[in-house]
Image 1 (cartoon, rainbow over the protein chains, first blue to last red):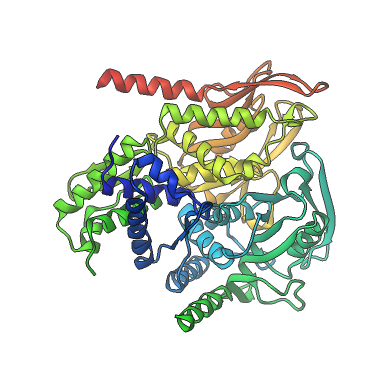
Image 2 (cartoon, each protein chain N blue to C red):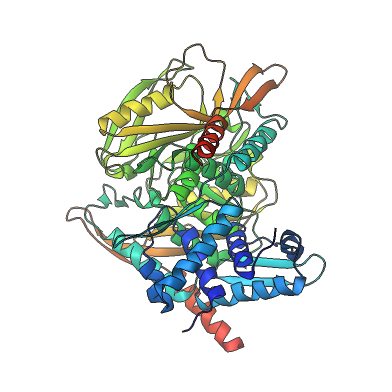
Length: 284
Length: 284
């Protein structure tokens, strides 16, 4: 079957999008299209430039025998700001404040279009780390972790707060919930995370960080290295935070349960985008 | 900014892929590229034909004021068979059988590449239904439901087995677990599913169907219409199944816990693919 350039470009664009953060050998396209490597390289060049111009991410080519083309769906600072603004708008909707200063997030965690944008933002922050898995805590973190892992092309590992027969053999730890000071349990199936993995921890809401601190301890049991922690919402009103190094999309403060009032502002994720872009400009 | 045809095609391909099952007005592309509608239509035609030739789905154009172009990422029968075969292979791996005849699935439910294929298969089966949401049961169903909902471009609604403050006001029902005959509870946040919605129910494992029957009852409370039920694995060894109308990717039988032996074969999903393709051929 013969393919025109425009047809090759349709196929290659969709293929790279469906295989983010993966080295696709140029020979794969050469064989598929029975076309010289130079033509395929020109096709890649067109995709690279359009993606760059439109802020859709970076298409990298690595030469050599083990080389190929890799699509990194990175988000720019401008788009990241739009995503954070959208999250802030959604959080300021009526009646989101729940008893205990929690925010109702289940609808946002079930909105694939918004989740994909948030996932791309979080993934961009950690795309250059050498990661093996995205770790999260059931239940609400799962959808967010999936969105991040889809972009990074990594497995998702789900820590549960209950022990189910369907998990096989598990490792469990006890931790003190930062807010309620209650002792709770976390459980992770042994077979879902190989020992010594590099992980990114993702969750929807962080207060004192008790849960995330629990995740850290559990990760120790798996000899895993936590290369990053990213949350959608962090609560600012915490006397002593158990976790220091993390990124958040938005910060919640001035919570007044009685009057259903609170403040949402941007978290520290956006700082990282701006930092990175100014560094890039300097090195240009 | 001027765009060449090849650049327009890169952009339009990625845009349609990021907005499946959504009507994108042609004027959106006309305005973006400052190009005549006829040229944009030709671009769409190239994308449509390549997607068709490569089995990547259907690109539909609807004429008229409210018209536009819609990408439906439908899977063909051949690819569906490959996905089912891959699932069967993975399920036959060593030590998957757990006490009580359950299968260890957590690793598969954390594998985004495989989940996306399974999600596309399930989504294809129900793409022509008029759906408002994908409903699932925490915890393991969530990743699968996300994969299906991503293709259908629908929200995910998560039913929990515990009642958390973070869910706001909830509706709960009690149901009898088909296998253990124990009474359990299911809880759904009122705000996550509008009354009268059309829903697709997705889960990872079905035995007698007690949980799914519980979902049906809970859906009644929300005046929702269940337009379909789809599970990854169904267990064949059930005396009385509580649910009749469903699709499954694979079927589990001859479970011998002592010797860690069992049979996995294809479920009824593939029949539907074959049926549909032969109907299409007849109407050609």
